Structure formats: structure tokens, C-alpha cells
Amino acid sequence: MGYYYYYGFDPLYFLILISVVIAMVAQYKVKSTYSKYSRVRSDLGLTGAQAAQKILNMNGIYDVSIQHIAGDLTDNYNPRNKVLSLSDAVYNSTSIAAIGVAAHECGHAIQHDVGYAPLLIRNTIAPVVNIASSLSWIFIAAGLFFGMSPTLIDVGIIMFSLAVLFELITLPVEFNASGRALTILSDSGMLYPDETAGAKKVLSAAAMTYVASALTAVLQLLRLIMLFGRRSDDR
Image (cartoon, rainbow, N blue to C red; front, side, top):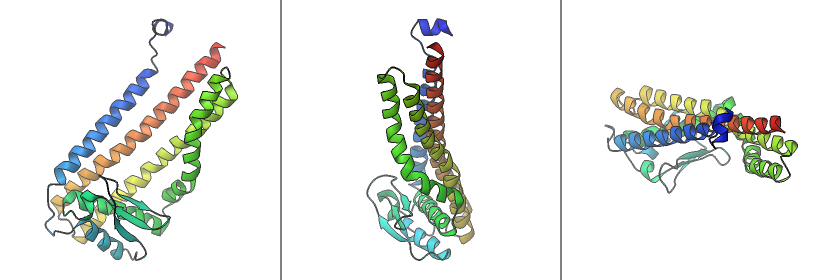
């Protein structure tokens, strides 16, 4: 291994390269899949907003408001104010892709309504994670500035670990929301079987972006541990 370091090549950079490639592939897949099915109109002709309203009502949820939000694939559900926001490409669109995305966001609203544990955990730790992830690099940089201070660097890595934990908890939340969405769309007849299959491809591609994000975070954490662990051994 010393041979590679001598010539300025750090094998740990492979971790960064792998994560970048995975993220790029995932983003390309979700955009291309969404683009394909955004051009396929559902037979019933429901818009994303109409489908969302029907799904919420079917599940006895009447305190969630649906609003139009600007942007491309900026759809989200906010549990704090119980607002389901649908983007330009989803709100008024009658495409299979739009209905699938709208149903997915409804899946989060349903999770919130029934007290789905991973969602509750994610929402609880989110404020702490936002602060910790921002401060983590400051502590690591400060540790380097003060001569490889192990205490500051360790605190920074622990803070970054919270962000990794958040990414991992997000996975079951997103997969469960998609599963709920596809079941509802199929059982309710809002999408026919072949249309549901198309919606599944859209949601599966979107889910891969979360997998890529989690994997990137894990690889970055691994690199930090290996990098600073190796330097500590060298001291």
C-alpha cells in the first residue's frame, strides 16, 4: 500500500469515485424513467392533485392540504403543517408518473397518520442531524488546523455519523411509502395493472436515489474513519 501512497495515489479516493458514479447513475435513471412515463396519460385521466385527494380521503385523512409548489420533482409532504406539495410536473398532470409520485407523497401522509415508527424517528432527529451535519466538517477542519487534534476530529466524525444514520433511516421510510402507494393505486383501480407497473418503475428509480445517497454517506464515513485512523497510527 505504501507504494501507491508514495506516488501520490490514495486508494481511499476510490470510495469517493464509486459514490459519485452511483449518484450519477441513479439521477440519470430517475430522470429518464420519469420522462418516459410522464408522457403516458392514465386511462382515467386523474391529475396528480386529484389522485392525491382521493387517496387521502380513502384513508380517512381530511386535515392534510394539497398545494402546488414550483420546481421539478420538488414534491414533498411536510408533517409539521400537514401540507402535501406537488410540483409543476405532477399537480395538474394526468400522466402515470405524476399519479405515482402523488401517491408516494400520500404514502408519507398515511405513515404520519398511523404513526409509522421510522418516519417518527426520522422527523424527531432531523433538527439535530441538520445541525450536526453542518458542524461536523467544522470540527474536522478545526482538528486538522490544531495539529490533528484527535478529540475535535472524533467529535466531527461522530456528528457526521448522525447524518449517515439519518440516511439509513430514510430508506425504509421511502420504500414503505412507495409500497403503500402502489397497493392503493392497484386496489382502488385508479391505475390499471399495466399502468401500475409503469408507476412502480418510476418509484423504484426514485428509491434508488435514496439508496445512492445512503451508500455515498456510508462510504464517506468509512473514508473519514480510515483516513484519520491511519494518520493517528502514523503519529
